[in-house]
Length: 188
Image: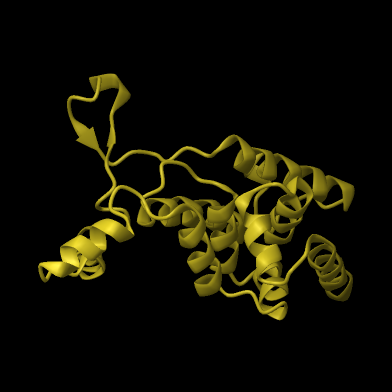
């Protein structure tokens, strides 16, 4: 299926993994795909931007809902009390070693003996969104899967954290779907 993805759609999946790592999450969920969509120049980002949806607002909602990974707000506050700015530590480590430098996963072949930076798996719901993006592309008679199809897949799946966040930010599924289809008609 990934062979049908446009370069921006592939970037969405790569960025989703980077975001999941940066937030310390153990899987790539629909929320990470949403943030990946907002980081592209594709139809999805244009539609979401037109609805007033920003990456910053989405990330704040995600962190409010599920928090960050191993070191969370309580840890940051405790470290801050002794003069350690956890966000600054993360920023410096990622500047030196790359995104996700703090998030290590055990290598299953080493039985957890040696940590390594590992692949962050897609959640079942995120996999479903990607499958639905293919179905959306086929229904529109497109031979490719673009960012617009991933966004339509998020809307069609409708149950993940991404749709909860979008709804909270005032972008309901019907409005998103209508805007994507309008954008595709305008472009074609």
